Amino acid sequence: MDIKAHMAEHLKTIRKTKALSLDATAKLTGVSKAMLGQIERQESSPTIATLWKIASGLNTSFSAFMVAEDSVRIAEKTFPDDPNMQIHTLFAYNPQTQFEMFEITLSGFHQQMSAPHGVGVIEHVIIIEGELAVFCDGKWLTLGCGQRCRFFADQIHGYHAVSETAVFHNIVSYPLDR
Image 1 (tube, helix red, strand yellow):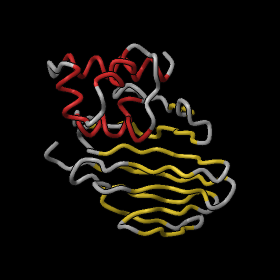
Image 2 (tube, helix red, strand yellow):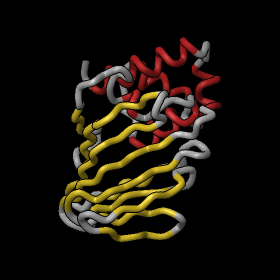
Image 3 (spheres, helix red, strand yellow):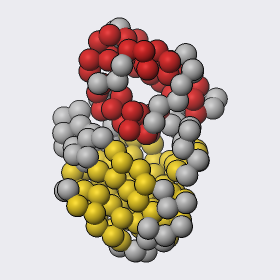
Image 4 (tube, one colour):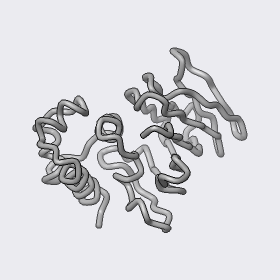
């Protein structure tokens, strides 16, 4: 199953499990009913920011939209409509550990801004290759290979490849009361 189909299927499944209409889902996520319907019908691919809004509003993990939660395989995906961002799922979300981990590659000096995630979500960033600027706490912090940072992700944050290519590990930790 390709990433677009998996996103559509996961969105439908979680809405059905929670007995949510498209209207109710739109209210919870801040994503329009029309866009949610287009995603479910595979007529549109969500941006990363939109996908985070959906995941946060539905109280589910981001990685659940990328790979099956019980998947042990490592999935490498170029995000739909964003060829300058490749997401490699190292560990899909697990309710026992309350985290998910990705290896993210930004190419072409790509910049990716993210809407706030749920309250209590923390991101840990470790630079593997290149130079990356991280926007958190209202300012940009430039990090090189081997450097790291941690921040509360319930605020606008972002990533910018300062070098042609930047590779980093991103660990997203969820609060225990999810």
